[in-house]
Image 1 (spheres, helix red, strand yellow):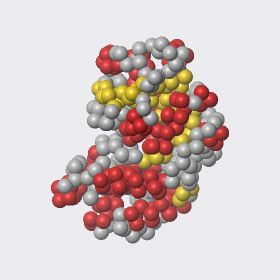
Image 2 (cartoon, one colour):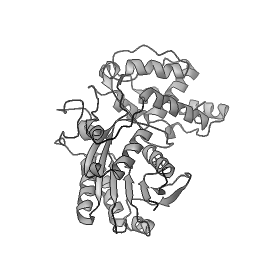
Image 3 (cartoon, one colour):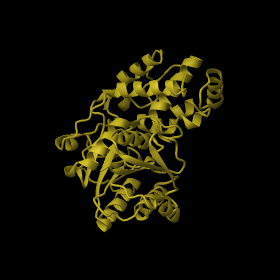
Image 4 (cartoon, one colour):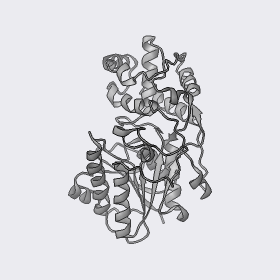
Length: 353
């Protein structure tokens, strides 16, 4: 019998990759978003999860075997992040028809589980790296914890199984996504090539020389599906990264080479990408018009504030994958290949020249 999935946030980086994998694996897929985008063989569901009644109406008649929650809304404070994002998960799970058979709910959060929210990012006492799932919650407000608690409460009430997935920075394609390092770096490299500005690493010395890892959207999608289908993975939290580690001083050269650039010298201190790109909107519009690109709005492609936050961390960040490996998840994705595949897709889709 064909299984049915509901992918929440189907127009985003993670959601679109998850929906595509599920379709490939023969699932019937419903993709929920505030503004759904067309995806092959995905049944579009339009709903604003902040509206409980509208969400319930939109979900009427959908009885999924698995639910993949891959969305959040960034607010101006962590208190608002908690209020809004917890309500979104609660409205979703309250709005679904009660399960009449086995159901699994997978929630995607991230390494801010260990690092803290953006307003306290990488500050104070942090757990030892590599981050491991058994490390407890920080003694600080965090909307990821509130989202988890909504899932746990609904699972207790309705009897479904759950999993939580904690990726590092995700590499993947989604226009209009607020946290998209891969596309941001592609746009930055294009602007540097256009203007002759140095393609300089904008982050901290710790990130430049320390070890790090990242998460390809396809790798995350594979773990989401594995957890839904693997009984031993139920009611567990998992880190999810590509499986390799690298230093940015190596990766920066690789990215520069792909774009036909020479990497600029590292200055030793963060050089804000947000500040570097603050006056580039009109230049990008001219490039888009000249090269017939499909997205002339720089703000819908690049999120330099988020890339600054990731690359500006004052600590080395690496992630342990032993827990899911022991249970049989063997997915692996070299991170440079993930970047190159994204850049090729952006070029093929006329998003960069």
